[in-house]
Image 1: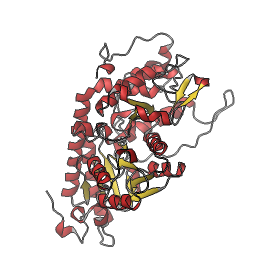
Image 2: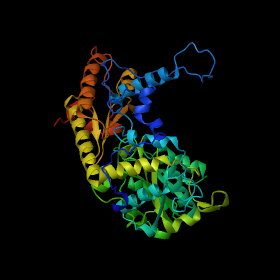
Image 3: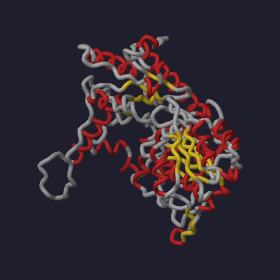
Image 4: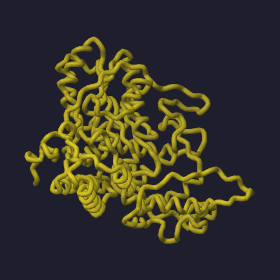
Length: 470
């Protein structure tokens, strides 16, 4: 990945008097940070609960204010967030990164990457050179040559899905969108926005697409082209749709390559699977891939990466004289800071560092699954997944304390790089103790989740006899 290499060891650059205004040291002078502690996480007290919404109003300078000062409000807010880091288990955000102090001086500039990232701007306040370096890195990861791809850094996975599906519709205007019911909600949002005909494909109990149902619906609509959303790591269960099986199904149903388009939604797992196997590859007849940059890699702002084939992009490109560029993006104006954060993180970690993160997360996910199973709690973990699905805790306060995501009688923990075994041990211990309180009088029982995660993973009173502990 030579395009991302640095000529130094990631030491902060010398600060000019102007840039000093945005350094952590200068922030300390304003009492927003304590000097020397800007990177330390505070250990939350055992009773730390969810943060409450602040009743704020915009203050008018010069008028008497009986409430707390701006600095006091921000310090209190920062303290709360710092405490809650150790209870952030339910959503796919990697909040374990150290680059914010080094990159903080960039916040004094407005950086806008509007238009095509491969065309120069008429102004200097952009980061398209960083953006192209990031795109080249992902193109190599997903096995497509530099002169064969086009892409851009998006505002998140949803924008990537909107862009990929729009490309499919423009290439195949009469195409029907196929997506499993476990696909991200933005896929169905795209169908509504673009007024596309769509088919919802059944999912297996583990969240993976039901290929027999896909086959049946492809044959039912054989006179129309197919635009298929393939999910590489479903939102709630972490299941992976098999690209090869889907391609074989298309072939068996008589769809030639000019009659289908495949978009891969790899928001969380797109940076993981290449270090396990090469299921995401443009050597296969896929049309586009998107990931979220703030998820597995980590970034303070939501962002993502969208890659497609260069030959497809002319279907969306529009010449915009005002910005002296061609634009084929969804958003037009785009955050110029996020490409720099992504470039810095990729350069600092490298493929070896990312591979270590993948292994650690997979190992910790299995550790959590085994711990819950040994405690007699219903739990499921898909192969190659870091999403541990468990029975929904009975108490809403417990759910909020650990910031869990819940669907029906299920909750899940997403074991991201910043989650330690100590955090997982604390979670298991507290859940076990709370369950004793919830179910001690026999008036309530743990939910049966056999239909949601499979009977073999359910530890309810009915299925307990078949529940196998390791």
